[in-house]
Image 1: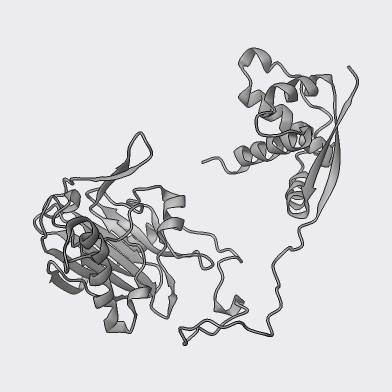
Image 2: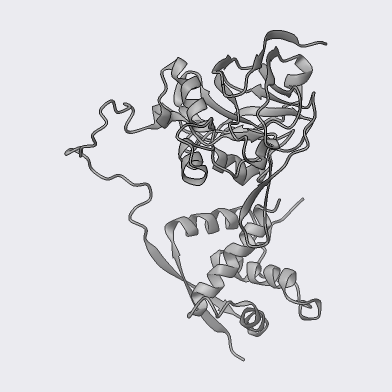
Length: 299
Length: 66
């Protein structure tokens, strides 16, 4: 079954566009010439404080999310906002921050230069958001890696005309793609090019391809917040009625005696990390929880 | 060599996880779980010639199936 095309346009270099993408719709970001990086922000359309989080996404899917992965919102929400339904170039990044005006001034001497922070801010302004609401992007068509000294790097990309990424909305979102402003870096092979943006109605097959996700109590909403009101004033002032209420505080420690037989002692003495711990108790605790992680969190 | 007692300091959150794991049937009690973890971790991380560890019969509770 063909997808219905709801909206289709060319996103020009130097620009971005805020788009309402409803749950069950797909935004396709497509190369026209090839070799163009796009930055992407998204917000819960009904609560802009819930927004895409590179850190959460990076933790779950690694540095290069691709088809089959999700775009997650920041804690304390931590919900899947969008599903990467297709990715023909397999070159995305959630490691690098968005480029900014300061980057181009401090490194290249520009007073004004296209940059993802400012393009995002200008596009988001259509919905009343401020430059402070721009967040680090899902960087599409961006080839990155980490070198042998643990430093991140960006290199040239090989995306071709017609390559695309499909993002399926799992909630109503404000989706904001922009053409990355970097024309003097390798990111987009030293040029700025347009991209095609389409909003498509997902088919039943598209929706059926989204893996089921469990729901967790800890995927919090405003209803869970003690402080529900968003501040309006920029000046911060102390709430004189505030009483701290941290979960599980105070942390209380108790002692557990663990008898080890000869065989267990021998194993323990070989396993314990004496370089980290002075006492046997801490070393045995390390072994216990290391085992637990391997047993329950293995990927 | 006699039995050696190792004293572990654990907070309430760590104990909660231990107790839930014990309740899942892995071991009879907290101390047995720690010994079970030690043996399993050793079997996985010590060289093969050192992992000829006898089964830890005491760790698993006697759960009748039938």
